[in-house]
Length: 448
Image 1 (cartoon, one colour):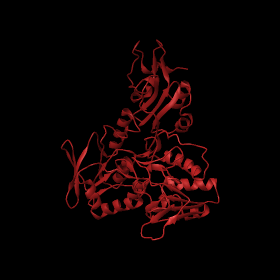
Image 2 (cartoon, helix red, strand yellow):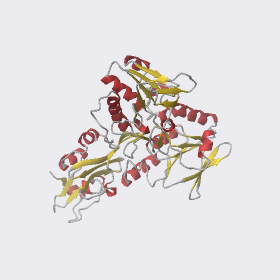
Image 3 (cartoon, rainbow, N blue to C red):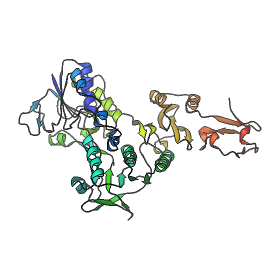
């Protein structure tokens, strides 16, 4: 049997690995229009500032593919699928490539919001860029050097946008982040932690403009800045748009495979065409798309089994979770982070906010089950949180995990519970006094 995979991103590459893990005999071919074997996109911004090389980014070198008997075809753009005859067509080649099973790991493309002149100036290479590939990073770096760029604007305050801003700042550029929502990382952080992150980013010399809709890219021959919908203008020599992603579906759509926002799949990641599957950023399941690495990894195991006819596990969706570094600080965001937006009662929150050390930890519970968490600036609780999601947990165990204490006044017994307060006891002013009896701060002891 021959399985053809289109795409060598995280979903396509790990699908190939998982197929090989389950079966040593099946023929596996991977086709990609990329120039490089599988590499990590997370560190692409560091390629711009030359903190890493292309070789540093490549995760699996040629030997890895040879050892697993995977045939990787670089610089091969698939332009047509013929499901009836089980074949794909490559740009510039006459002969089709046959398959028994086809897996589409088409990934996603950067979303470009409806900003006047944005698309035209990007296509015309006039100083508007998106960052999704090694070639994008090299193009951005070359433009900065060629035109002696001094000021940069990053449109989008998401995960990639902030890391991109950090690396651009490391290039000694005056850097501004423009975010449409009223806080940074609106999908990963609540308002309090978003404010803490903004302060930390601004302390590093990066300007942040929130609640700002970009109306137009300014400039003629080259970019000169942006105009916001409130009329404000910001100067810039380069514009970097990191405003989310959109699933890549054109190839599937043109081949009459059912698509909506993404390529529509069932619980076994089968598409509307027999023996054609889809995985990763390009898929839509139960009206939802993911666009996160954990979903790609989880789906790659399911689609590998499905393609081999081993339908033992069906896909149930992936709990949103991210763990990475933002401007050098650890961030984990998983599950439900803001219960005020959820239906029903019974939600509880345990929270530790240490603004002095830029550390924020929040655990969300419902009916004693761990439903979500934000861990920013401190990753000690990460493994516990990942292992205990959706499980019953003891509150005292969580207090120890977050190092949250109850301080008790030795004079009157008044309690100061850190889990319920906005300020940790250690961060209270020296002249703090007990609200009940006026005893000094050093008159409080940790409750045993």
